[in-house]
Image (cartoon, rainbow, N blue to C red; front, side, top):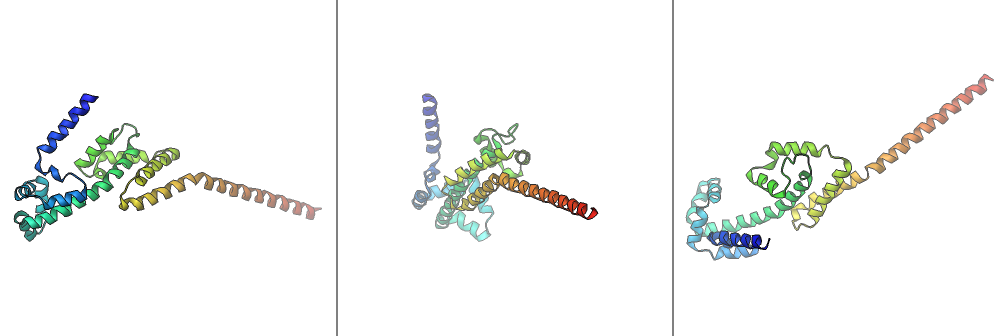
Length: 218
């Protein structure tokens, strides 16, 4: 295990050392400062990235020209993109863990058993467009109430531990669903009592009616 960890650390070191732009792989506040210090050659490295080229192609013609020729424009855009990426990851990983909580125990593991398999599936394309996702959701609908509540409670714990403000609304909804599911039996019990009381009342009414009829017949 020790040798594996050392080998893994060396692989990471080699990966980041061989990519000059890896200096931007840090916390968002620090990355914004580092963008300010990038050289012209480093900006050219950004312009050569396939992902950045696709981004440029999605912009207006004037914006495209500025991004490809003006380092100041690229600097401002890079800072905005890094901030957006950080925000995306802040929301993405808790949701990934929640989805894994739902799918990791399903029969035949349609989206994989390990979270890394689910992560790869999400990176390839929008996971909700996959047939495996549809299959997983069909199986989730068949879960017993206790199983569903246990998974939702796990998701609540995941979102509580997250710092993403965007997920507060999702957390409140999950907590409400858990509360509703936990109170289903109580509501069902109250309903059964109401039905029982109604049946007793009907019996009493029928008995009273029979007695009244009997008196009049006498």
